[in-house]
Length: 303
Image (cartoon, rainbow, N blue to C red; front, side, top):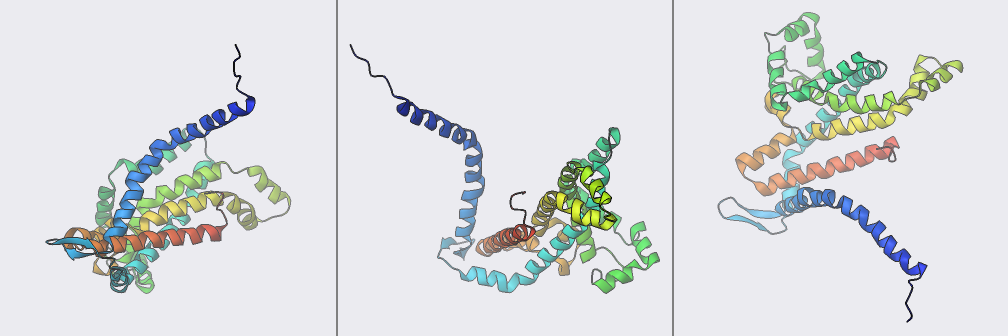
């Protein structure tokens, strides 16, 4: 009796199939999650943005692209305000977060652990409550407002257009301050991770080559910490651009951000197509801005 012995060439495809199937099986839960909670909602949002109708008679897909032009023509100031506030808040968190991350990264023992816990401690409190606390901090009778008035900083803020009078509440300054406070940990943690891995021998080598303090930072430290900078700015800018809690609780009618408009259109006006169009424009705008930023930073391989 003769038996057919599988050749080595026949075994390889089976092994290759098993090797190809294993990653797919491992990725399946994440892919399913993305499909259910991102792809399908995005398609539904795009479909809703092209519908017409009202809440009583229902909405029908009519490919009404006019919703997009209406959204841009009516709410472009809120779009511009959202991106400008998010950009200022991102810059503020970077200026505050970089020295803090550097300080933490070069500490050791219990002090480092304590400082890291303090950075993430705000997350132990609800986002809404943290923002509401700023109403008390910035109230006209508080010590912060008193300090700003006593030192003349309120005049500086008025000159910058961040406040309209001596009051800090209900102003762009209050909204941006709230954004900086709420998103500061998103900047500090990536910076800390990047700076902690920085090889200080390179900084010493720059000193041996007669580099001064600024050149050490700009030519050595900054490029090596750029992955953390890019990650931190993305983690801060993206949620800040779509935020509406800070503008709602700390601002006024002149500080309305696009997230607040979308919330109003969805929940109060019940104009779902326009709200969906606004959401889609915001999402695409952020994707384009982030893509351009990452490309300009030259760190596509690092983020």
